[in-house]
Image 1 (cartoon, helix red, strand yellow):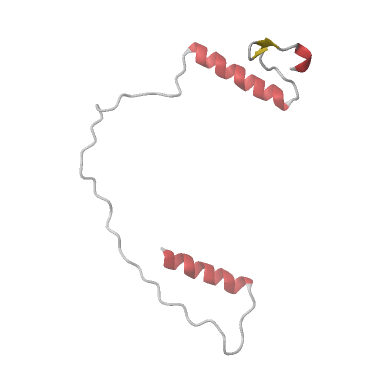
Image 2 (cartoon, helix red, strand yellow):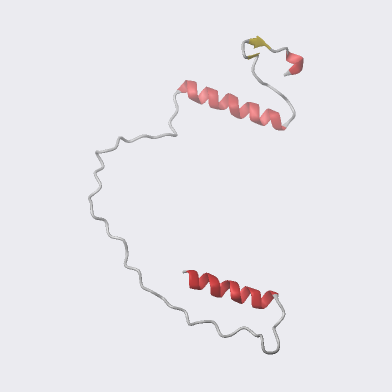
Length: 98
């Protein structure tokens, strides 16, 4: 793989730079060596009952409402409207500074 990257970069450099002239030219690139890699083999059988099925995209109504509020606040923030929290660190925030 490294040979392919080196050869590709050398080719790109020949396109981007002027050709060298004289005694200090690049030599020929070494021939490409391809080593066959055997495919991976699985040694153990996967047990489907070992893990429980979880659908992370299924939300209960409270999580769905909270997510909708966050998305609405993000959308309104793009319009320049701040709908932040009423209390920050236990202190009521006036509407004008939100």
